[in-house]
Length: 150
Image (tube, rainbow, N blue to C red; front, side, top):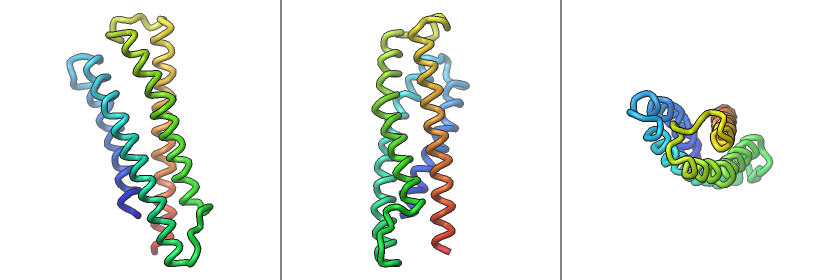
């Protein structure tokens, strides 16, 4: 149960460190963007798998320990919201960003006021906000689980 949650939270933290460092050390923003855009779906699929493992394990644990799966317990609702936000990012935001990156070929050569770049930047802000929200919800869930397991 904890492993699923910790893998998800840890992978988000790792990605949060990897992404800005990729832009800092790689020779072009295009390369860094390629790396980050390749890693983001991996992060999402790890999160979806880990979240599902956590949810199933936690409900089984609740059923065995308490006699009730408690599907509406706060820790379960938070993980369900995390899963929904991850799905939105993976299937609504990431594909649009990928299409825009492909249209622009090299984003560094596209003017800041180009409508495609403006839209890409807007989606990037939303992508970052969703990941931050997922991380905060994950930390809150971890707190609730740790408190429960005392």
